[in-house]
Image (cartoon, rainbow, N blue to C red; front, side, top):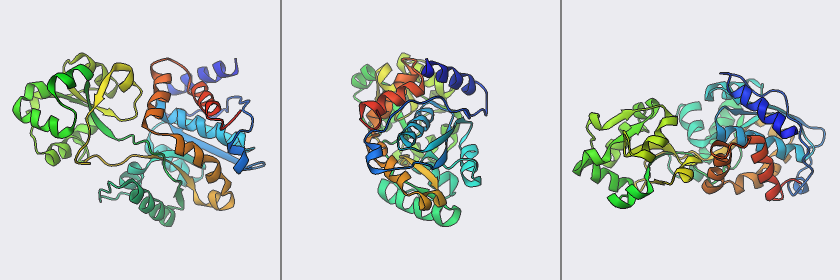
Length: 319
């Protein structure tokens, strides 16, 4: 009953633009393996997060993980927009939240250099953000929620397309079969459609490119109408649920977007146990795991709170 109440609170909150879940849902998790290496008894932290499914799950995972080590946790999950959450972190309104290394480097720090090596990107991001803004980045998960291009499984097999190089060749040879749907932001970003065409050396006619809302792209690609191919995020749970093939980025064009906890450096210096408590969680989050957790919310209709708690228990992180 507690979780049902929490889910209802979250859904009501998410339906309101800019609303954040500030009332902590009741939690009855007991210490598990995370508490064996970290004791945060008496420490109070505020965990934030953005408004979409993956962020709601990550926010709740973090809150429950820290609570299992004795911390008193305030939740501010479901905040609207990257800049809103980041501003809250820099201003001390929240203490930590999961963001993406590519977002931190390109958006928050305004850097233009494209770093495709995940380890190097994290190291340079952490060093620069700590120095400029007193924001540190914990070691990231291996999951990579980057841009990707997807196509229905059967269509990929029929067309013999498994990589973006295959797609570029198809676009040049048979543009109608390579029709593409993307959201407005992707179609206008240098690290989106224009850069993709340039890097892979193809030029799809404008009549074969359609702008759709992000949520509509998945169904369109599944149906093959109005587009055969479309933009997706690599860890979206609908990819597996709909049977879509994600094309391999064989030229490593798209930036790396590994999820990582960004945290106020002062908090981390005072309580390094925060990093110890969350390290096993990050290590366990690969692409397949995040897709599964996201699908349990988006496809199966479970609440982020229930999905998070079940997964933490299944790993032995909490009891």
